[in-house]
Length: 242
Image (cartoon, helix red, strand yellow):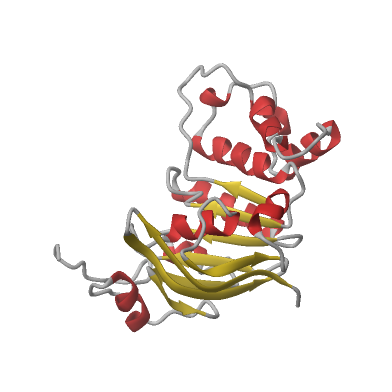
């Protein structure tokens, strides 16, 4: 398999605060990696380091054996949910067009294909502020796909939508994964484990990254608190505040 992303001994400090500590991980072509971990654990910082928006204090990141800055056109990025107020004067098509910012030429065919891929072509003339949360998320994914990237990074893509809509987003990503590498940051451990091929547990250090089987002990180490693994429909207990 071809290695799409190599992260080697990466340490990142922001305002002298340690955010990532000696991260090592390789992601190969057409893998679907889910990253979980607590707030403040460095997940978003890791995505921005892969993009080359944040430079490591030590170690290095390679994208297809090249510097991230030289490979941004090959990386699609869906940031944490962007809010658009109702009636915000920009259409779906205009938002998706923003994905051509790194391209020299606007390609109408690619624009149409990206909207078709995420099933929003019928919404192209709608104001984005008037869409549902799930529809808005599909628009942002289309914006990331319009330049035909080889890697797709998503930061909490289902955080502001209901579980049924979230499932449809995961199913969409599963289909997209047939043609590109995906890294997805999420708090939804149960949902992503049904779709991703591997899971990484991140809390400043990379505690675990392998297949998608995670033990109770690994989760407790990641979140630094007691954890119960539960199944829907099965009686379970809830911990008090700790």
